[in-house]
Image (cartoon, rainbow, N blue to C red):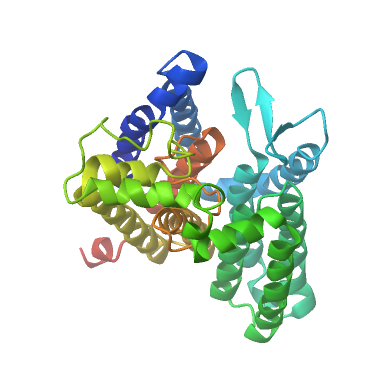
Length: 359
């Protein structure tokens, strides 16, 4: 029910936040809404398929799907095959639908790591047998995503993967050097791209360049501040009138805060908190290590994306370009977040409840 509530909020807010923009530039106020509903339908069908089988039967598909994902991540970098937007090659375009391989990767990496780590418990303490294989696969995946470039998704996948490795029992003396070594690499990636440095500077002081790099976050502040406790009313946002860039995508939380106020924005945060709590409870009750790691990975990646998106909208973090799960407009992210929920429900379906044992 928590996910259904978030999806319902998403449908309403995508239309509210995008109608003016769509009418102005596409002459169809429901342009984004219709596509959002189509992706929602695709996600529902895919989720029902995932729910129809025991999650353990998915293990036999992990390796071929992982290879297919690598092929897609390579193809998306090829000019003429993929769609380039603002210098980034992250999407395939099929007619009026877009597809983002990195969104596939975040679910496939969770399944791969859960499968590998649950099968290799006997060698999990070994550097060569238990640590290096998943690190090589993770490094290859993250490296391809960084070439798009998509730093936000790469960092999210990396963070969740390291958490799964730690929970599965990988030695800290193997993990810590990689973690420490990734810090200067992350710094180099930020300093290497001028637009990333501008985002950092805008985060530190957006008012220094209010008409340039600081414009988006300032407009987000105005949206959130204008909402007050109860909001200006659903559909009454002023910032969506072509002031706030990404109003229906990365900064949809700002429009929620403006139209529904602190109460509406707080309700969304509470729903995500409930989602995370319920997800971790499913992970704890899983019948096996594979299910435990799958549930843990799914709830962590979705929860992390939600935290980062809300932190960016409120100016607590530099802009990352991650959508708000279940709510933001975005085809691939919505579909694969719904598939992730289906995996969670699948694990819950076959979980061993302590209450059932007592009865």
